[in-house]
Image 1 (cartoon, rainbow, N blue to C red):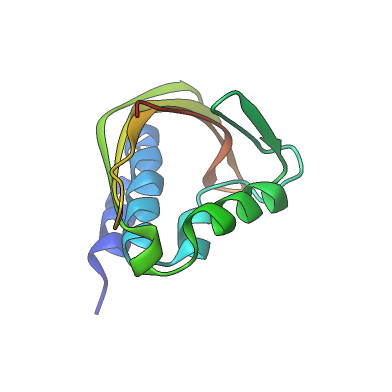
Image 2 (image 1 turned 120 degrees about the horizontal axis):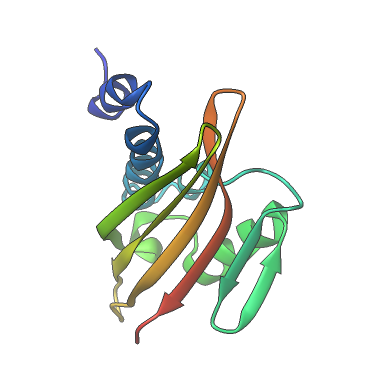
Length: 138
């Protein structure tokens, strides 16, 4: 049986904006299962990956993975439930796009929300986040 996520990704093939959106949808699905590796699969596993948030710069996939692990853990109980809203995808070329939107996270003791801008590059047929700038609104 084909999962709904796999079906959505297959239908998005060939439309760059939909392909980028499928990456974000896969991240949300992974997060909401408490599957941190599935969420992080949307990021390029590279030392050149950058993450800007709260006045801090984190560089490299390993450092970003450690940041998420420390901050959110790796279970549905600690990670909470994530939603992306108001997503806009702008395709910049055959191998570049950016996406922006709002995140809402419902956790046990808090409900952070904020804005994000992502730069994605396509390599070997796969869209990957190469830069993430996220600002929290609370």
